[in-house]
Image (cartoon, rainbow, N blue to C red; front, top):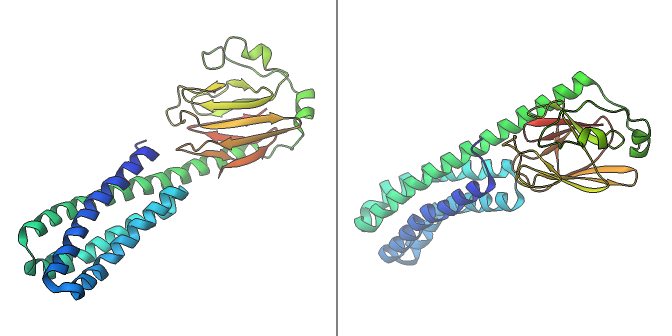
Length: 270
């Protein structure tokens, strides 16, 4: 899926240029032509665009898809309204050369804001579909009783495994008496990934569990920590997020039977 944080931040940077340059030209031209009152009037016209862009910046810092969408939509509305005031009513009274440059970059900024909005809305739709799919798997299998990890290990039965490069040749033998993640949907369906004491880092290209066949898994996606009688999963700022029971989470305590969504796959704590 065409979506990642570096791409979004590139769009934010390009928006700063393509909307900042015409704003600067418009404000300076208005001030030169009409003085302080012209500057204030121009700033009033451009203020909504500035506020919407600042909302996008806040969304990037807080990593909020909803704020990103609101900021992008606000930017587009502000640009649509501003086009009439800036380039229809005011531009004929200002220097044509600079305002021509402002118009070209302004239209490019609107196009970038539209693509940015499409990416964010697509991400929101994908998250909803992912959560619905995981919830359906959870409902189909039914809730599992929550037990301490020590009890789960004591009563654990060996699980069927497949010999793959991701799991390792000895995973099936060594993982039988340990807590593990077992694929119940996605690219690693039926495969067992034993967990060790301490941190178990999961990622597409590095970590204790490498899910190289799943392109929706981030390079360093999440970590599952086994400490004493508890298991916890913590997201490491992944693009597609980590889910527990169909809900996106930053950090959650998990138990035997819980379903964890990582990338395109769903894994059961066994």
